[in-house]
Amino acid sequence: MKVTLDLGSLLADGSITREEHDRLLALSARGTASLAFSILVGFAVVSVALGTIALVPNAVTGIVIGGAMLGAGLLSYQQWPGRWDILAHIFVLIGALVLGGGLIVLADASIPAMLGIAAGFTLAGIAARSGLLVMLAVLALSSAIGARTGYTHASYFLGIKEPAMTIALFALVALGTFLASLRLPHAYARLAIIAARTSVFLVNFGFWIGSLWGDTVHLGFAAEGSGAASFDISDKAFAIGWAGALVATGIWATMADRRWVVSTVTVFGIIHFYSQWFEWFGPNPLAILLAGIVTLAVALGLWRYNRALWPGANTGTGVPKASAD
Image 1 (cartoon, rainbow, N blue to C red):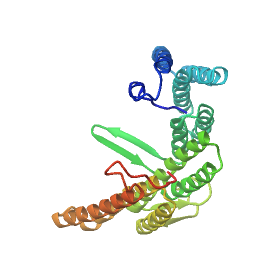
Image 2: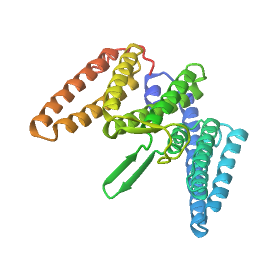
Image 3: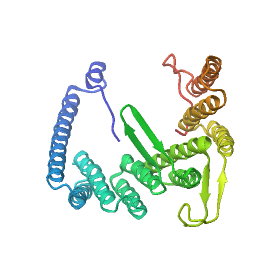
Image 4: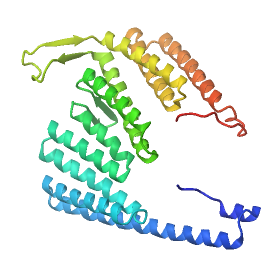
């Protein structure tokens, strides 16, 4: 457990003695020096690794270097727990990313490669207790079913190739990891919650894409366009289903005091509202005015909900109610 103390104030208040102040200050200085050393070594190793990849630019180089860095980081966690955690975390994170990138290039972003990367990121994230790696594992799993992002000048793109499959798969992942978080120790429960929250975002992205363009679901493992059995899900069905899911999830989250879920449902509810509103009415002045009024009403409702949970938030004197988040 990490605790932040204002040593000067504690000394002035008489809460600690001068000897305790000096001893804690010495420990802090030692930790600061260790942190600086770990960061410098980490950046130096990353620079050497990137330089080597630039000199020998192929997938195998990335796999070898990434694997070596990942192994060194995991070994450091095992052999020197608590001593070089920052350095080990840098090694594990960069090593996993470089290794994963090399595998993607070598396997041409195939489905087995993405599944393997998702599994590897999950194991590395659990070993290093890295929430970022766990989040990347969920995103790698989404890439296995066609999720993509893109960027050009001043433009970002999100692609969900299989909206229905994305919704079904990551709803199960979100539910499974959430239930697991209720039974795991705190350190691992945090990772499960991160996986669940990332999955919630992907479920909503699937609904968002589906509510605009619909989806064609192909049965079995036949390739698209092969003549295999399939059925269409209309954009209206996605829109209605998304609204229902948001309302049901919002009610559950409110009753269970899940503030993060309430906030997320509200944000995606506004996105859904704006998407459908302007799809139907277009960007005319009256539509924009009414959309703004509705958004303000929702914001006021969310503010009152947060104030009910934290009655003294405005004055700094209140005690928050117990919340699951």
